Length: 182
Image (tube, rainbow, N blue to C red):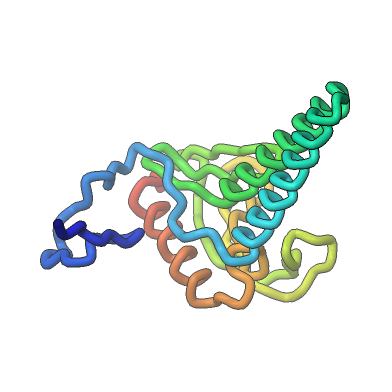
C-alpha cells in the first residue's frame, strides 16, 4: 500500500502549482516565513531540559517526596510553556492586520492604523540581546505613535539567512499593500 509523502509546503507528487491550497484563508493568522534554526534550536534545548526535569520529578516522586515532585513538575511545565511560546514568536499577518508576538506580550495592529510598511537600515539587536549591530529592520509606520519594528535580519529567525529575511519582508509588504487603506 503506497503512502503519499507530503512535505511542509506541498504534496510530493503535485502536478498543478497554481491551485489554491485548502488552508489558504486570509482571515486566519499566519506567519509569512518559517521559524529560523536559532529559534528552533533554543526551543528544542529547552524542551530537552524540561524532559530531564520531568525525569527528576519522577525519581523524586518514587523516592517519596511529593513536594519535590510537584516542584519539578511545575518547573517542567513552565519550561515547556516557554519553549512553545518561543516557537510562536514573530510577525503574523491576516486580512485584519499584523500581529507582533513577543515572548511575554502580543501587539496587534489593524491595517487601517498602518500608513507604510518599509525596510530600513538601522541598529538592530543581535538575537534579541542588548548588543546592537547595523542591520535591516522591517517596520510599520503607524498613523499614531512611533514606528513599530516587526522583523530584523539579526533575530533568531533570520540570522545568516538574508534571503529568507528579504522574502519575509516582501511578503509582509505585499500583505500591507493589499489590505491597508491609503
